[in-house]
Length: 238
Image (cartoon, helix red, strand yellow):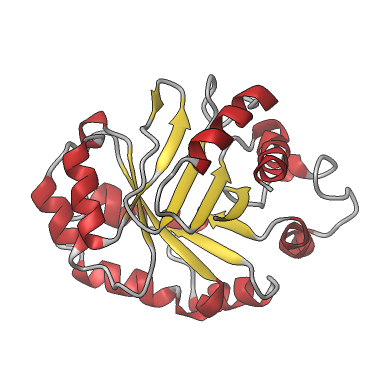
C-alpha cells in the first residue's frame, strides 16, 4: 500500500507558532505545509465553490506528487441531497480541472439527516466520471450496511472510514483505494489520539484487502493535534 497522511485543511491561525514558524507569512503556509505532508483535504470547497484561478494557484503551490482531496459542495450533498444535481456536479468537478495531476479523491460527506436510500445513491453513482476517485462519508448509521458496501463496489466508489464521538464506522474496502478521516474520538474536532490508539488503527488500515492507495486525514485541528497525530500515524505506517 502507498500511504498518504495529512490534515483536513491547513489555514488555521492557531497553528502559527505550533506548526508554522511565527514569522512565516500566511501566503506561504501551503508551501510550508507541502514540505511536510504529501496530501491535504480541501474543506473550503464544501462551503463555497472556489474559482478556477484558486484551484490553479493551489496546484502551483504544491510539488509534483502532492495530492489534494477535494470535499464536494454542500449544495450537492446537504441542500439538494444528491437529487437532481447533474448540472451542479458537472460544474463542481469541472472547476477542479486546474488541479490536474494534483487532484486526489473527491469526498462526498452526507448529512446525518439523509437516511439510507439505495436507489438515490445508485442514481448519483451513475453520474460520477470513472476517471476520478470518489469517496463517501455517511453520517447516518443506516448506511453502514453490507448492501450499501456492495453497491459502492459495483461502481468503484470508496466507503470513507471515519472516527468521531459516538460513531466509528466499520473498516471495509469497497474500491482499490481507501479514505480514512479522524474527527476526534472523545471531543469532535479537538481530542488528541494517543500512540496506543493510533497503533490500533494502523492494524485496521493494513488489514484492508485489495487496496493499493490509502488517504488519511486528521480533522482534529483544534490545539494543533491534527498535525501531531498525522506525523505520528505516518511514521507508524512506514
